[in-house]
Length: 129
Image 1: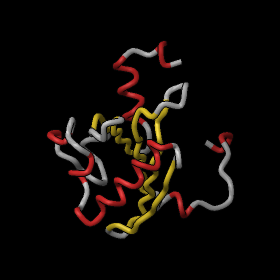
Image 2: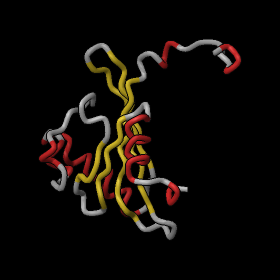
Image 3: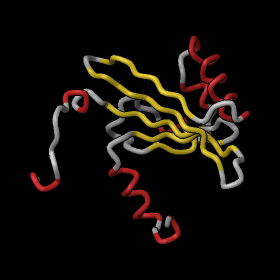
Image 4: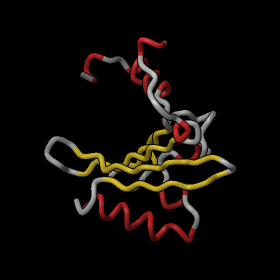
């Protein structure tokens, strides 16, 4: 339960996750991201509180708006993409964030370098640690 965590613990958990997170609120404003120093897609701190549309190349803003519109309307709850970037495979997922009643609160972007994950074969069990 999140109520049992203090702000320091929650911040440390978000930094420990093996993914980059970004959160855009219901008004399309950038509110949060983790892994500031090591991000794949670096952002200046000045972006916080600004429109997410300003964080994307002009040629993709219409797609960003469509994705956000689909999340807000309930047409979709997630979307995923993957790209090749500087010899790495980057997996990008977007999730509509909703409250318990289904009201749209914003969008969570989850980005992960999956280059090494794609190489995994067979099994490695905890007992082999």
